[in-house]
Amino acid sequence: MEIEQFTEHDIPEAVRLTVEAWGTALADWDKDVARVVCEYSVRDEYLNKNLALKITDQGAMKGFIFAALPGDENDADAWLQQQAAAFSKAEDLDTLQMVKDASRRNEDLVLKNMGANDAMLTFFLSSQKGCGKQLLSAMNERLKSLGCKNSFLWTDITCNHQYYPKHGFELVDKMEYPFDEIDDAPFVVYVYKKPLN
Image 1 (cartoon, one colour):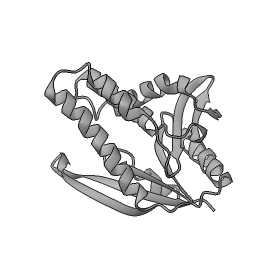
Image 2 (cartoon, one colour):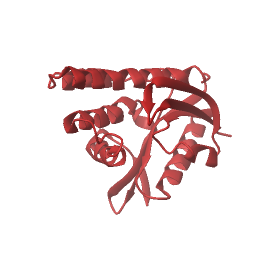
Image 3 (cartoon, helix red, strand yellow):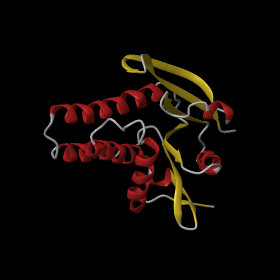
Image 4 (spheres, helix red, strand yellow):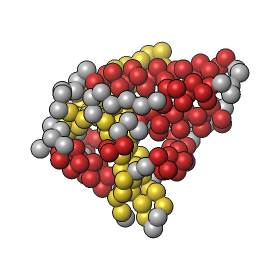
């Protein structure tokens, strides 16, 4: 396994991994909408090119991790608007808007918990056991070298959120959204924090 810098050329492979990972959760969605949502999620969270890593095995990407500092921005919302022009069904356009709104809402939930010297892990995906731990360790070292004190992230009930307490993260906030129910339960977003000392 090798940890390398993630670049814009890696976006298509990161999207492919995301589509695979989220396939079950997006199974009821239109295939083209689901693909745009996955690509938007990658592009939206790729905020700081210096804080983006991938892990490969014999050249094949097995995971990636992105982080950002307060104030980092990109043009993913403009990209999404361009993609939306290809859709005509109101429900598809509503889905794309809902994903964009949820992303902003969840990032705001994290940002209100962060301090000036903190960082946010914005996207973390691993398709092979053990790769996630290596990526997380490498990113934490990079953040420490920049003087960051804590790393924060948001996750939700559709993800493996139990992973984070097992790897030194503390739950610091959560928000329930009863209007986004899954199996008759409220949709819950969790915010975790890990000291980088």
